[in-house]
Image (cartoon, rainbow over all chains, first blue to last red; front, side):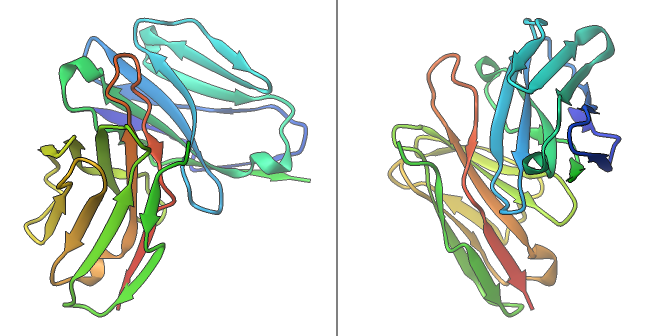
Length: 117
Length: 115
């Protein structure tokens, strides 16, 4: 069975601070995908990034960066110079590789990020 | 390219009533997913379709729940004899079936309140 753990239930930082959201996963699959989604107060899940299990390159997109470490089954997300608009619940998710058929996402419980002005 | 849409956005019903939700995926996305999200939790997978075929159902999907995608486009999720425990946000997602297009895009959800 697949499992995603986001141990940080809530994080509160002051604007412009850097913040890292942790994600640890469990799977027996050899190929899989990892995702991060953002859920602002409006409720809609917004896709941020997808990472293949065979691609361990870290990625940077503007103020966002992701650190994928297969050895520790972690896929952490860092926001640099946080802004109030970053306040949201962030979810890490895991799926089978689509070539394996069923690919419903397994989500963590989310981390509620609060950026204070 | 319009996103995933869901209707209604909110539904309040009394226990024991039947409710039906609709999801319109991104056009040309042949895979469609339903999830349920309760307060303070991450979304939980319910079921998914490839075109009109329902290929997987979670054990969360009791026999009171039924989903259809008759023409491989929009989908409906029906809950019969609703219970207070069914109160949740019901999310729909879709994705392309093309190789390498494994990202699911979500709709705004339907929030169900069972009184």
